[in-house]
Image: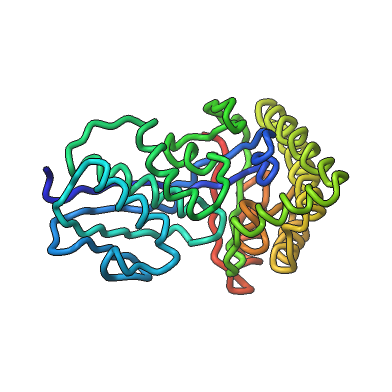
Length: 306
């Protein structure tokens, strides 16, 4: 047993395919190493968690930590562990913004537990345990966040079918901006489900997003930045029709397009969270960044080719 352990995980961005991925359509996600989460574990007199918004007993955690609480309690029970521990979670991944903060926390805690107690593990086992937490948080998670964060590489993903590393052959820049409003993934996933149940015609938008995701992959393989930009715009239009966009997102999309972005859309659950914008060069990316900073937004720029 180790005195303490440090597990590091990173954020992620869904480029295209959010929401439709829940219904068997493909999605593309990319790791975002501009943000990270670290987990440390040490001996304690009681089971405790310390993070940005909570410091106290595991048994008394706030609702935001229900998933992590269940993960830890089930882990300790499964392996018949009686030793008390304190778990430190230090993260600069914005919460509820579609950047994979919950997946990073779930995976980071799961990996740290295995390492701390010297229990043999592999990626499948870590993923299995992390999903205990993710199901509490998201209800019906697609697995995209978990897999992108776990493997720390770009992923082309179809739920329960395909998980392919996805090299990005694209000379372009991605701007990520935080709306400042928490997204509600669980709520929006449920609302889309209810919408599809009530009116079957909405299924066309799910189908459209699947087609657009495959076109996006082709555009990226062909280094066709202009085509990818148009695809992102069309994806946003379909997401808008699925009611997961809102005024905070539309404002940021419009600012990006007005300042030279080739395409812009929400990323993640929507109704808040983050927006991404595609720029063909660094100069335009910086111009978009400046426009966002002028209205007080947090912004990151990521070079896509990797």
